Image (cartoon, rainbow, N blue to C red):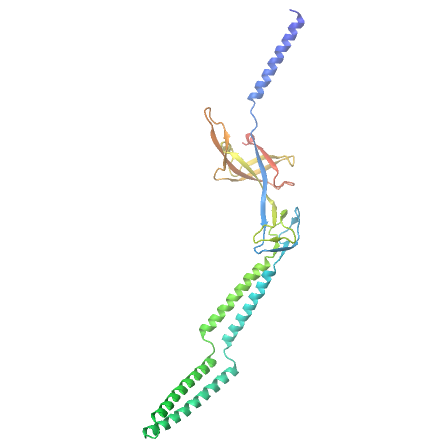
Length: 328
């Protein structure tokens, strides 16, 4: 065999050996176990408890807002009309309560007194007529009909006088305690109705409850929205966390308080995360071979971790990866 053929054969054998070795090395080399998560943030949906038409929109998507900043205003003519009605009812109830508290006016008391005295005069006259007719009847001068008429007239005048006296006493004493209490209760009820409508009216203008960023604006000026309709969604950019769905066979490596080293492709940097939440119950299953014959359903648990320190540029929706094999 020629020397060149021997050398070529040797080189071929070496190449095959090296190739097989590389294939075996890659085959048995452990694959890094990366877990992918997503950045999330606290979101607040802004809505009004009263329906109306958007009269003014003061923010736009992506805008930074501060706590207490006006976001939008609704036009609610129906609520304003109900407020006027409630205020009128409160005013009327207040007038009735004041009338019950003060009692009758001096003029009313004097009028009731005069009516009582007039009725008393009529009763006295009827009494005299009755006495005179009675004597004549007993003497046989007048018939029984005249005596009956005088008796009936006297009884009617007594009743009239008693009624007039009662009216006078009521005017002097004023309203009863029960009437005053009822009038005061009506005032309180009317005031409560006004407060309720004022609460609805004030809700026509919405303010930001947090410092954050406007994520979405669903409605525009001129659009009619219903009660509780989420017009704006705010994101609290100071309250960010990363959510992972971790298979249960990987959970032994972590616990509440564990520190994770994570990579954020969107920032091209490594960050530190601290686990502060692990779901008490599994959510769904991922298929994984765990024995030679047949497979088990491996459940996943939601794990949340927050940045150890504030990360500039970190935004909701960004991908975060963790090499689970590097967790000590």
